[in-house]
Image 1 (cartoon, rainbow, N blue to C red):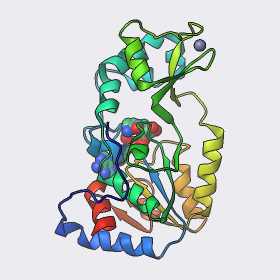
Image 2: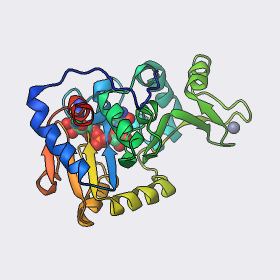
Image 3: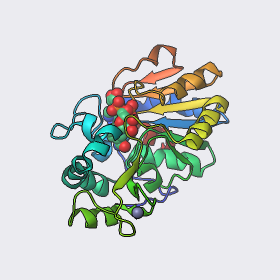
Image 4: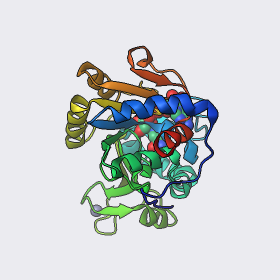
Length: 263
Ligand code: NAD
Ligand code: ZN
């Protein structure tokens, strides 16, 4: 895992086919004052973390309706922890931020981006140096005891699953769970409130790598539009909001954002 300095330009190959698109995005950024980003799984695809939807977006061996559901977790917490041991830990621990995460970090560093609202649980925005990251669905690098709420890190969880599944709290023997919002759970109230404030008050929202079909998160770009903000979508596949967006680019986000920010 690498943490990256926001002010160091990464190496990338400028791509002629992206010049026009990056110019358009740069112009809209330059003419806006209150910019926020809304990101989804697609922004981390170039870091090697599979998305749920879009090409290559399936984790076949484990069923998300089981490892990502609170009802199933309560019934059989070992299923989540087996998935963590076999798949999730290495995916998360080995992933590094890509050009898209770095470009957003640079925009914040330069005082151009107020916040990133993310559906992602991988922590890669923070590893790219971003400071104000509103995590709607939690973070899969953090864990806590369901009984006494003691906190555990990714490394601690990894050590514990070597001994027992599910891992049990060192203080009270409660079951340890990931600090993520599982299907069937409420989103963190304060974070949602802050995200709604940012979505309602921005004049530009950059929507990156989200299919915009997971609610309630997908209301936020709609909120931005309803409040008169410009919305720029960068997503490989079409989204339900494309027709209403100010601009829409169906390409991978990494090079396009790097070229927008560093060319
Ligand atoms: P999604 O999986 O529904 O959609 C991802 C979208 O990203 C697709 O429409 C695809 O076309 C696009 N995409 C793929 N590669 C891209 C790239 N390089 N550049 C730009 N776009 C790209 O994602 P979602 O809308 O975030 O909803 C999925 C839910 O699953 C979220 O709630 C999220 O919490 C969770 N999830 C998170 C992660 C993560 O943290 N990295 C990964 C998978 C799923
Ligand atoms: Zn405990």
